[in-house]
Amino acid sequence: MVRKELDSYYEQKFGKKLPSSTLSKWVAQGKIKAIKKPNGTYDYDFESFKSVVDNPEYGKKFKASKSKPQDFIGKTFGQLLIKGIVPPEEKIDKSYRGTFMYCDCLSCGKQNVQVKFTYLTGNGNYQRTSCGCDRK
Image (cartoon, rainbow, N blue to C red; front, side):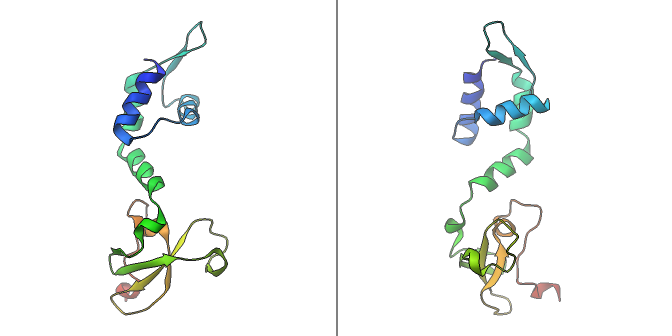
C-alpha cells in the first residue's frame, strides 16, 4: 500500500495528515511492516498500520495531544471548576514542563488549586476530580 492511501485513512480517522516522522518512527520500531522498492518508495502493510492507528491507546494519546487548555476554562471536571491557566512563574512544581490550571473545588470551597492539565482532560493515566478533600 502506498503512502497516499495511509494518509487518506489517517485523515478520515483523525482529520489531519499523518506526519512523516511518525510513520518513519513506527517503521523503525517494527510496528508497521514496510518494503523498500527499487525506485526508492516504500510499500506499507495496511493491516499493521491499521492495528497501530485503530488501537484505543493511540486514539487516547491523539485526543490528549489535541486538547488546548484555554478550551477547558469555565468547565467543570468532577468537583473542580477550571478557572484559568497558571503562569509559569507561579507554578507550584517548577520542574514540571506541562501546564497547570487554576481550579476551584466545588465540594469544599477551596480556591485557586493548581492541578496539572493532563489530570483534567480525562485522557491521562490519572484523573483528579477534587482538591483532595474527597479522599478524607
